[in-house]
Amino acid sequence: AQKVTQAQTEISVVEKEDVTLDCVYETRDTTYYLFWYKQPPSGELVFLIRRNSFDEQNEISGRYSWNFQKSTSSFNFTITASQVVDSAVYFCALSEADGATNKLIFGTGTLLAVQP
Amino acid sequence: AAGVIQSPRHLIKEKRETATLKCYPIPRHDTVYWYQQGPGQDPQFLISFYEKMQSDKGSIPDRFSAQQFSDYHSELNMSSLELGDSALYFCASSLGRDTRDTIYFGEGSWLTVV
Image (cartoon, rainbow over all chains, first blue to last red; front, side, top):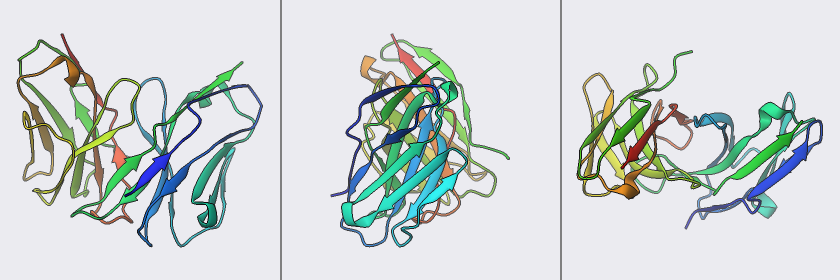
């Protein structure tokens, strides 16, 4: 069965620190997609990145970077020089396609608090 | 760019009442999903539609029903509301229903049952 584990329930950092959010997944599919979503206090779910199972290149987008390693089934997310606006719950998700449609399996989320 | 539009954003209902949530997907998106997120929990998949037909069903209670209309908007109907139905309900959409298709979420509808 597919499963996403975010072992860090809550992380608190001081502004300008770097922080890494961990995500470990389980799947028997050979083709799958991994996602990160951000949920700020206002509640909306904001799409950050999608990575397919055949592309293990790391990705950098501004202060955000993602490290995908199939060997350890991990898809970690690093924020460099964190800012107060980064405070949110971050969800890692796995795209499951064993049914008739695409649907997401979410991890339990990591609450990131960035203190000024 | 246009996003997924949900209404109402906030809703307060009493136990045993009925509530209807509406969702307008991103233009040209043919697949709609509904998710429920309880307090402090991760979003849970309820149901999805592709080209106006139900395509998959998750942990949706029998008291809930949903449909997708000819203009691709979707409605989630919830009857005999219970306190435990209080949650943030997300609608999401994608262009296609393949795992390659990114799912974009709306801002959510907060339902409070009192």
